[in-house]
Picture (cartoon, rainbow, N blue to C red):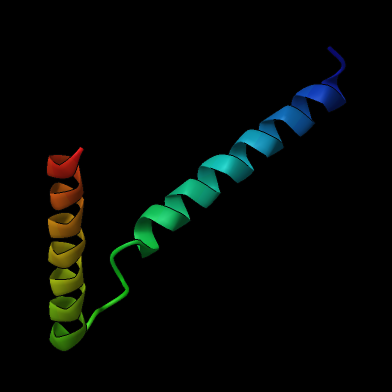
Length: 58
């Protein structure tokens, strides 16, 4: 493979790895208020209850 091919391949891999590292670093920076978290957990419990009821009917 010519040198330019290796350079392009290296740059593509560096771009992918760099993007993944940025994504990992910013994953926990979103703060959710306690009120919103309680709503999310309540909705999750509601959906799980509906799904378990549907499973018992089947």
